[in-house]
Length: 541
Image (cartoon, rainbow, N blue to C red; front, side, top):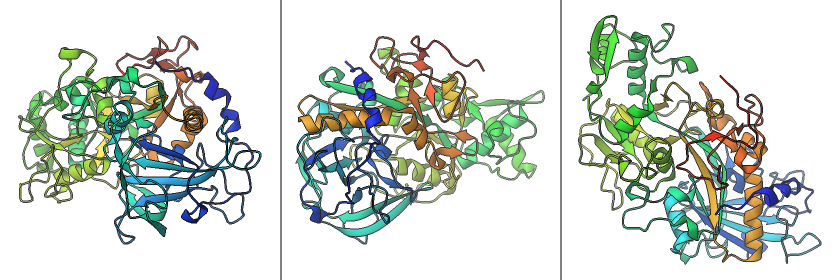
């Protein structure tokens, strides 16, 4: 069962206490004295201290750098690269090396000095995402990581790479990843109770038995979006302007909140399950005339409406994630109610059906897949994809100006640089405010889980990470420019189930949802959220 957060939250006030006179760690500092191997989703990465967009990270476990010229933290970021000339891949292996002490980790023992100053190595594996991480902890599957700054063969190299408006920086490039290492804990985009059933488990792998995980904590709500190709967004926008669903003042390409098109939850279920294989299925009433969506768009093209073009075909194209990907599991549990309804739950569409389905096995792959469908580029088409996912097809398959839909985290593409846009569900935007009001349904409660086989210092470190990560102030700090879209603030929301009082009306500085999935004391991704009776109020709007 999930353990109460009260003990951890009581310690939260210690997490920003005064620090020792220390500085950023390098491989020359010596071997780590405390090591955490944490595979799984990227949902809680900012709490580990990774550098994004040049911002000095504040994190749960690493001490600050007190020197005037310091980077603000004692942490250095280590990324795996085959050579220092290569661009690092955010989906593979990375690590944080820093100093910590008992002001950051209450209960820490050993180390040096009165506060037990300790060298801490946090090794992250993002490859394989949520299911792979949970499998490593629940079933003992050994994985590959950056073992430590020496074994990883790391050298100083300040590098960066960009993805959808976010720039990730690292200080050391490491050329060697080590196989056969046991996980300490795992992060996931959704609580581990729903990583069961065919669509939620990597093919050929066992289901996750959440009862075997002694420590399971929902840290916050991760707002997930349903992106569509830019040209499909324009088509939906134009059609809904024509039938009066969007204001007549909207124009095609308008990025404001009022002009974002919407699909219903039922339509999304039908699309992602392959029950709607063709966009011609959608009917639009313009005046007194009923037409198909492609026909309405064709009329707009004839009329010379900027931003519209006739698609190459009218088939539904889906850039879905691989089985077990956390954000897709969030869609399955929150929208498709799988595996919650058992055999009554609709299954995800598979390649070879009536809809054109491609496996996009990472956040970056989703963007490339949607971009290729929109523009006819080959960032996704013509690349290889490891078994058991034999897609995408070879270069030369006709593609481009096709209407596709996918699943994506909402802290991407806030600058609208990628060739996709998020849409509304049931008229609600994927914003913290709409989640707080109970309007937007697609939210995964991201989590961290571990067994009791960790040592005492590891357990203390993980508990401190839980306390820090769950704080409304921590979550509010995450909702910055990275997820601030033209239509509103997306990203993350804090949980009243963790003992935090929601504001009487929406407050982005205190983004706590009044709804809970934890009436029984155990977060349940299949539960329908209800107003938390511990606080008993909700804004009516």
